[in-house]
Structure formats: structure tokens, C-alpha cells
Length: 77
Image 1 (cartoon, helix red, strand yellow):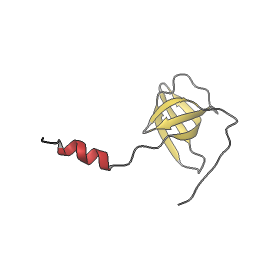
Image 2: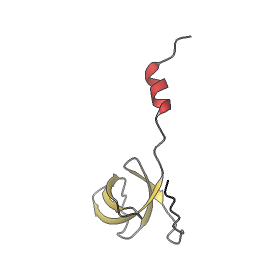
Image 3: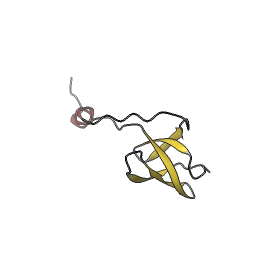
Image 4: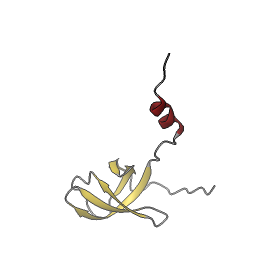
């Protein structure tokens, strides 16, 4: 059986992590987010979220709302 080499290569790459971020600005469907460690990123899918909202974000796309009272746990490797 022949195997698609590109698919085999993609399987070697790590999965994109799901992160929690805070919305700091919204422009249409694009949101500016701040990660708990201080990193800043932009993501699609703001969907009318308010500034200060906690969201789940993966690979530049907001996947949903995160609980506001979720405890922060950081691991350093």
C-alpha cells in the first residue's frame, strides 16, 4: 500500500494547543487577546464578545467562552 508522504509528515507535527486568553480589543470578527504569560495575539471569531471576556483559542481561532473563575496553572518545561 502506498502512503501519502505529506499526511505522514503532518502526523509528526505536534497538535496546536488550546489556550485561555483575555479579550482586550474587538474589531469586527477579529479580537486582540492577551495570554496569561503576557503574550499578545489576534484571533478570528470574536462574535460580539465583550472586552475582558475569557476565551479558548487555538491556532488563531476563538473556539468558545472559557469560565471566568478558572484557576491558572502554569508548567515550565
